[in-house]
Image 1 (cartoon, one colour):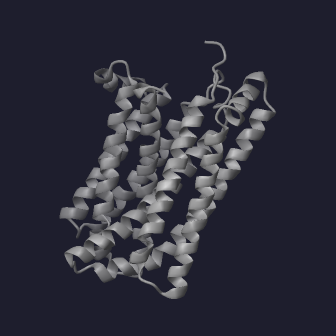
Image 2 (tube, rainbow, N blue to C red):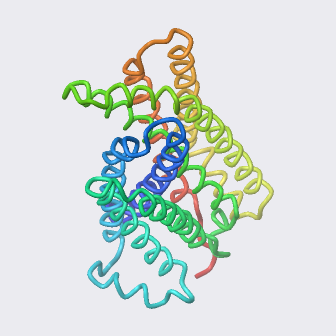
Length: 306
């Protein structure tokens, strides 16, 4: 794959990560608001939102490299009624704009919590619609390996899995930086991590299991399909078998090591700072695993006809 071909995997993975991370962060904000001071929670989530916004910018910027005429990309929105690509672009912009609005308010207008909440839920809705539009682009009869609803479930699973791991990592990094700067919210950050990490870890484990199940279903569908489908399967289990196995190993190892580290934190009552290395490693392995998975997604498809 050349630079232009890599633009699509970069865009889809980063944008899904941004949407999933925002959704997970907003769920934490919603639940933590019942246990901790609401305005303080809004203050500590501002840095993760900044990272999410930057990720969305990089994703949309990278997508332009796939186009033959990047500066004409704005014209694609004119086909909103008939084109899933046009809808994808529109909802990408809507997700980014609502995320930037939330970012501004959490930094400079923390008292406007109701407005922050509304805009945050709007961003999640736009993001989930965006992922659906993104997946629907690939559901076409001429691409046998892609023409399955498992692609939709796969994209949502990837978004939430990467998002959960990204938020877990950002929370630990924020805690480290807060300690170095001797900030006032160190204790609050540590409490929020202890409060949320059990759920985040359980969610990651469920999503990894769901991802493996989707992979199994996709393989079964290819095996039971026509000659083109079986050819795609042959590419996966022959030429790309090492990469396929590496992806599975990364997902399983990352999730089990994360579970082990978090259980040790709760049982030994050790400080959340000790989670930095295992959480960072798990996040990295899952990210690399999904990059491999997206590469295989594009590399094993075979077009039928025109």
